[in-house]
Image (cartoon, rainbow, N blue to C red; front, side):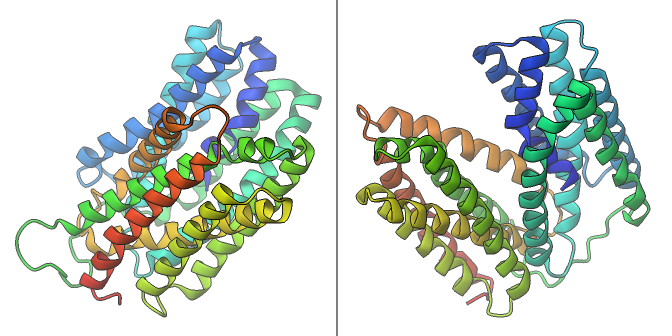
Length: 360
């Protein structure tokens, strides 16, 4: 939760930076891209250092960069310095810590439950962050926000002692025998496909409601309610775990995601919109733990788990860009059909793979 917090509250954090440094929309876009780009780059480079370094020391260093980067943000001299600081905070701070955390989660016995609990905590942190950042800005301006983030990063030091310095290679049975282990690569590909579908409709969910004639305030309520219901999806995954395998819950969740996107593409009434948004969020947060858990179950090195942030960021970026090129005029319902296609493709790829590793 600590590692992912900066990305979760990015919209309100960028708003705080915009009011403090008087940034325009283009500058904000580059600033958000720099931080998330740093997180993605940290994920890609973690492949090379995750199994070679003292992980406890790496965690301390990344927490330190998260603290220092946030504290220095307030005193940035100009936009270029601010851009560099947020990139380094994402790269050496939250991004490195996020990759390291996912790599360690891949070593536990029930990764789906841990990932699902993490998602629940992230949903809660998003709700708290969105409501707290404006209050901090009102009373203490930007220093109140950045000091708050620094303090949250510091809490990570309380658990550093629980992190192993090195990883051994003993992690359950080898489900693929000898040779190249293609399964985590395939599951990582399925996650990318899923994230493309997710980004395709999520980026335009507000526009779909607006095109249907709903008021902005009503759309905001719908998205807030659907976000809370989305947290329930992760909670279900945390409770159920792999009690019924991964095929059944993952297949049902992807089926719900497809149904939600078809409703968004074909129905224009209010109840269909809010119901589809809620179903979409529930399915999204129920699917994610099982796809990540499948990567963990087949990745005996931890190198593919650390690539998850980059895979997610890539999918989230490709989805809206692809859908934006396909949308003609103001027909935002097209986003629903694009997402339906990618969710169906994800189902076709992932379900046979899950059966292959004995999760049927």
